[in-house]
Length: 505
Image 1 (cartoon, rainbow, N blue to C red):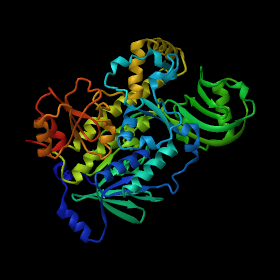
Image 2 (image 1 turned 45 degrees about the vertical axis):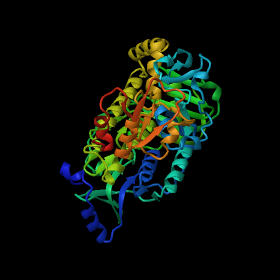
Image 3 (image 1 turned 90 degrees about the vertical axis):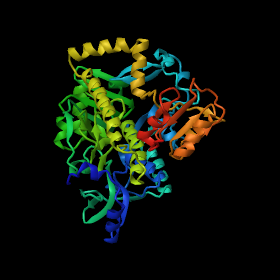
Image 4 (image 1 turned 60 degrees about the vertical axis):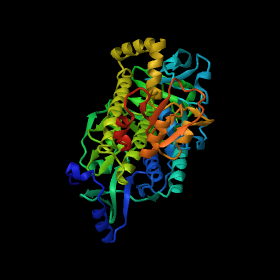
């Protein structure tokens, strides 16, 4: 894929687009490779902003046996729940284990974990998060992957996204006017291409992106089996001198074997005999597996694209960053990418973006990806077999039992962010409900005529009314993804708005 002159690659070129269309090939605003949760959510965001979107997915069937396992569930953190709720999607998830009021739990109840070390609700100092109002969405929830994808698929189709399954992207070429995407003998044309096609991303490889990071220390196994003598295994998480196994319910196992990722990288099939051998060695007991139904392997390989954009090609989700599933932050990181990128790319397509807006996608999301990769690496470091890791594990156990330690870990696991707009209730309607249209807005709690005039002049949605609890705010300017970019007393409004709303007085 050819690199583009940076200045030219950022332009929406109607004349060049017209030439492409005259050549007889339908041109989409954006093509997305990968119809997992990240690709689907991004497609929804773009279509909501009136972009034409083609979503290509190599799998014929969105269903997978692995998605039906308990390990096919994923934890949604606070930003993901907020994002889904701001588009009216969270309420569509059944989420049977949803935490309606997380701080209504008994203090000794487990709220989450770091490397298997639990932190408790009673140890968390919620006073450190004053922006979380009673109307706030939960800090965490569990969702089935299959259900999440089904909800997002229905939403994407309702918004007019064209989804083609069984069509695998095999390559792409970009020029000054757009991108030609190849899927075998078929070619598609778009202004932009986004790779949401996972850890083995074809788009990332075709685009020449560097994917830097660290190699794995273990092979992880996720399996559903029949165990002839299940009483030999302990319930829950069991750390041994040789590794770890976790039994969520009889027959459903996760195993960590610190083999440097050798088995996962070997490409060998996961057989009943192999799983039994690994489990016996890790558990230290002669347990017998009588049948193997479903199995997959994974590692703690941690890599990140050094750039999230090359010309008209962008990356999001696992295509941009991979790490072990410890802590379940991969899906959340990817959904955050989609929420951040969607409105910025849409504004660029429509020719409404301030200069440099699309560049802020990488500037904001890349550092967050680095933090999550390091969070994953830190957990692996204290889970290794051996006395050094055990000593670190003991120290972390003591720290996480403290109020500050538990609060810090909870804020990282749940993704608590102070710059996300609180879910104010204005005349009985929450901010999240007001954001269902995907627009940014100026919230004015004092009905200031000057602010109303500014919003009208710059085409920004203006909201005022009685606020149940304003948290000492008077006015805030909120981006379409819920990030506060200005509040009263923080300088001149037009100057703060200019990088995001193209609103220069």
